[in-house]
Length: 231
Image (tube, rainbow, N blue to C red; front, top):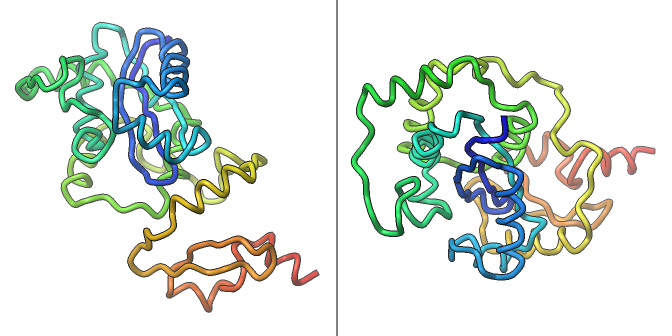
């Protein structure tokens, strides 16, 4: 199946864009091209892309569905993830002209959407991307409630992530330019309970929770750097 709902995620800020398409691969290419040409229809997404660069964004499907369910599914995820209120979606209503509004889905309509999606699991790669990219980010209580309601009853949501499983980008490395862009983007955005440190081994800046600073080798950004010192 090539149709479904997708997400464009800024791994630096945690903000996202939700869309849908009957041809996901073609839509991904169109988004990438428009952003590169500075002509994307979402001015919020375009400005963020110009600021953080292409390396700060990932695009991936979050749910495959039949073409006739695309708008309903897209609306479902826009609401659940707060893509319009706190993300890059300009319009809060899926498939509507900018600024127009549509009433909430009826209980019966939502039930039909839920039944249509039963038995379909989110791709494992998508799950790993989501958990990796959102580690450390905070959701509002309203966002938590909507996400919880959206995921209730969906198969595969319990116990999907196993301790020790490989991260989605294991073996990959950010370019030096990408590292510099991400570092600049994070400056001045200190999270509560976190401190900014400089790694004693590689010299890179990193963030760590204050209560973990002394317990987990606070001078080093990761276990690899810590291991270099022990050798």
